[in-house]
Image 1 (cartoon, rainbow, N blue to C red):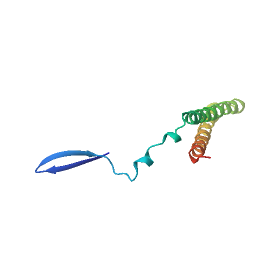
Image 2: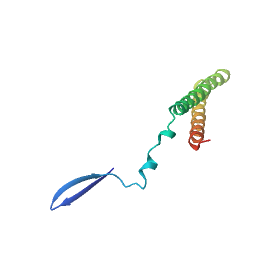
Image 3: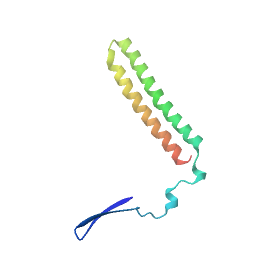
Image 4: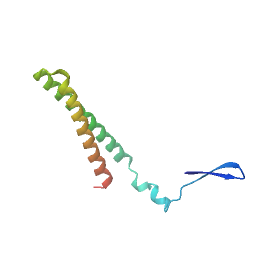
Length: 101
């Protein structure tokens, strides 16, 4: 929506009008393209990838900290690496989902 502000004889008026679109049907998702089970599968895949990679990074960092006696260092590094790996994996999954392959 677009909000226009204009003045007529010193009186300020507001006018709200929809933005122009070339084809409104392209912006709406058709019923054939809606797949609630596919959307649920995508969300559960994203969740498992993010949580799994972070948990593996944390436990891997804790294990290295215990063996090297450097308490919080590798825990933080493992957490950040797990988070980065999870985000990268999530982006690949979403890109694959929306490409239609």
